[in-house]
Length: 88
Image (tube, rainbow, N blue to C red; front, side, top):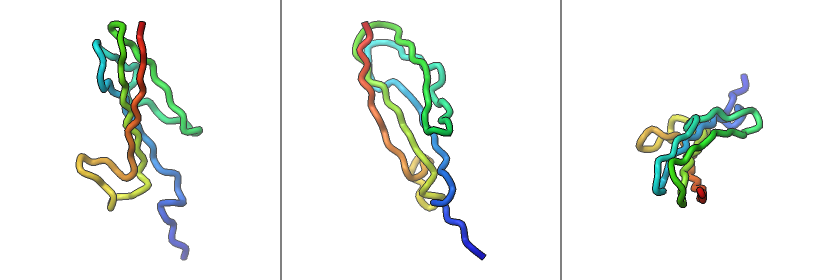
């Protein structure tokens, strides 16, 4: 019998968008959009006023399995991304 390893199945992917900083309110159409089969995702963002904003995206997968759960419930592996946006 052959044992199937976690690495042989595609990992579950997830992400969540949030405002990191900026002068006004930021609204995401979907802050946790689905990721498609090509590993792409999109959402629409609305800003309440002009200025410089920094948006944060937290992305993760479950490739590390249950042994890699970090404080706060995130699975290995995860990363943060920051996007600067100028709204006029």
